[in-house]
Image (tube, rainbow over all chains, first blue to last red):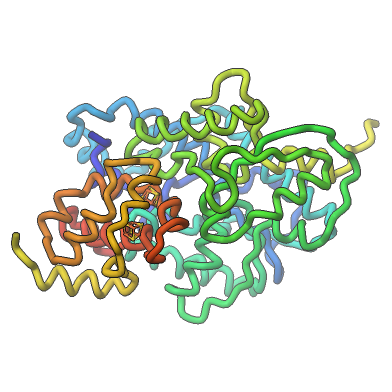
Amino acid sequence: MPVPIKSTLGMLGDNLRKRKSALPLRRRAVTGWTHGLNIPRGGETVLYTGQMWQMVPAIDAMSRQLAKYEGRSSARLFSVARSMNKVLNLTPFLARTSARERAAFDERLRNIAKLLAAAQVPFGYLYEDDLYAGGLAHDEGLDDAFRVQAQRVADALRRHGVRRVITVDPHTTNMLRSVYPTVVPGFDVQVKSYLEVLAERRLRATTKLGETATFHDSCVYARYEGVLEEPRSLLKEGGVTVLEPEMSGKLTFCCGGPLESLFPGKSAEIAKRRVGQLSAVSKRVVTACPLCLANLKRVAPADVTIQDVSDYLVKAYCPAPVPT
Amino acid sequence: MKVDTEFLSALKLGGEFDARLCINCGTCTALCPLGVELMPRRLFRYALLGHREGVLGEAETIFSCLLCRLCEANCPAGIHIAENVRTLRTVVNRDVYGLAEA
Ligand code: SF4
Ligand code: SF4
């Protein structure tokens, strides 16, 4: 048995409708990663996180909580939780994360901002208007709640006069680029992943890393958005020998992440299979999605290192500051 | 088996539901990371036949799909399997869970 589907989805819908996010985070948790980077507010081109990197540590913590209830008859508990959540935001209690986990995920956003700066791409940020794009509601078939959220995001972009968006994860890329134009009339913002933006600029590495790793394609980048070559070419130019696992590119195998909240047990089984395929090729694994990273990391044995592509790229392309 | 015409038209309203093109080859089931538990062929048959109870009784299966599209990458009929599953989710949310209202 999964965790009770109705109450879990109900909570997601309620949060989105009332609090404008699947997992409402405090403002500082959303924008804290920008500290000291001096990213201007707004502008025609913005880096848009859709709160995914900030939310994943919380999703992770919540799914650990929920996993305790998987397989038990906990329908009543969940329905009480849902009714309470309507009036009082329960998320911070269900999804308690450590500062260290949050900082590690925030660091990836900082990596990306530094990489764009190194490629001389001018960009701003929307700070409190960097809203969640609603992907989970879309995927779970909560179409009405999703539409409302998509319109909110589109309105925020319009209000700030945004013409181009640079995304930092596959799910937000897919929502804004492929789904929004079908649900928001007249949505014509240009959307590119930072990997596409960097690859287009043919940035030269300042350091050749001389490392070897196996690349895990995210299903959404590979099969929904066609982002396949960009991370590979950027890694190669950075001096990383990219190995291909069994099931790669267009035929990649899912990390199990999408099942995390409703079926944590099944999600972990799929993640283990994937870690097995990846680590058979190299004990160093590179991902390009916060959900893949968290889900694979959770089940990886101690001798397998899983890192985000930006961890490698920042070392290869951003000259280290001179110590003073 | 009871055919529910209202249910059938609700699925058509979903627009993208293209499972009628399925040739029943079984490739999707063989490749799916969830294996035998998720059966697009059986689910889609129920849906196309308007067998409401058949579809709604598979709620757990419907919500276990990863929407990963590995099946689609190999489907000889080019069916949008993941989008069809998503359409079934909207129906279950509305008809079984009462989660439709915005
Ligand atoms: S792979 Fe396509 S045609 Fe074959 S059974 Fe699955 S949905 Fe039908
Ligand atoms: S999209 Fe769903 S049915 Fe298709 S392979 Fe992935 S989990 Fe299986």
